[in-house]
Length: 430
Image (cartoon, rainbow, N blue to C red):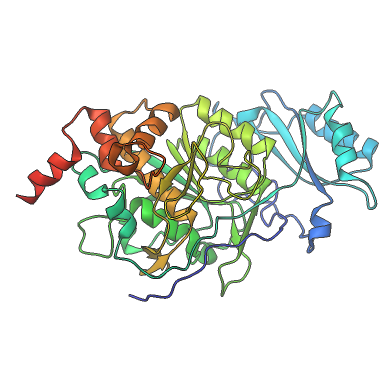
């Protein structure tokens, strides 16, 4: 095993590599890169009403929409976008009908020398427009490079081993919206059941992405298989949705933005995910918040990295309906934010290997795994109940101002009305 600590993905302003595509597998539209932050600031997102949007099946289409027919942009919606573009001097870059929101979404470039804020204000007042916003950028949260403490420190800290006496996350579908991941890693045990790419068609690159591999490893690495490590919820099924991309094939820097994330969030609903892991952070985003609301209404639970230095309502951790998470090792965590281990966590990396990783991305993954353990025992678990159980479990169940970390076993014991985890651990040791 190597002990090289790799940095978590750093945020850089970026344009879509995937574009505004449908959420169907291998159906990606290319959007030309603006190349500079200044160019990217010329992009906006506009949605218009699209109603049922039913159209004839597309050639070679293999995946039906929710209603059994392909969801397409209506003539009226396409004309509305064209009219808006002509009236405001905009250039259409890409477009995507979003079935779950019943809208047609367009990426538009504003004219050189124009004020984006002024245009957005005018568009937001136009009756044809459902939503008008800037193109936002997101990235996983970076963490610490403190000395290594112990093997699987995070797994032990949240008492996952004791929790697995009651639950292993059986039959729970977890969507990891991130970079790609190495689905062939032996510690996934063939439980990556869906792989969809909203960045490009590069399957080889998908399998060598490190951040998604590390996050999914914390959540779901196989247990008791005589290989590597054990995940928090080793029986879950993983839905790998690539919405972020590494900018350097030899490094760890990566980018993702409003449209790639929107595609992935819609796909998570389509793939019937029950828990969604969002180990990233960025500004408030109305389009993404709308998709979160749509998924929440369908019973999906969302776990996301909490904003720290950014605005409190940033995406995802500050969005309504999210279970927000930060590192237990971080001081000054905001009230209402769960804590979990994120420093020097051993996890999976591509190529069948393992490494020590730090960051609130790993803390988020620990909580996602714990939520999956709870959900396996209570299929109608809602966000409020999951959050309350995990919040009360911090510091072994005694909620104080010095909370250190969630405790998956304590939360499960309360949910199931079982004996305390201390009693369980004593019985296990005999």
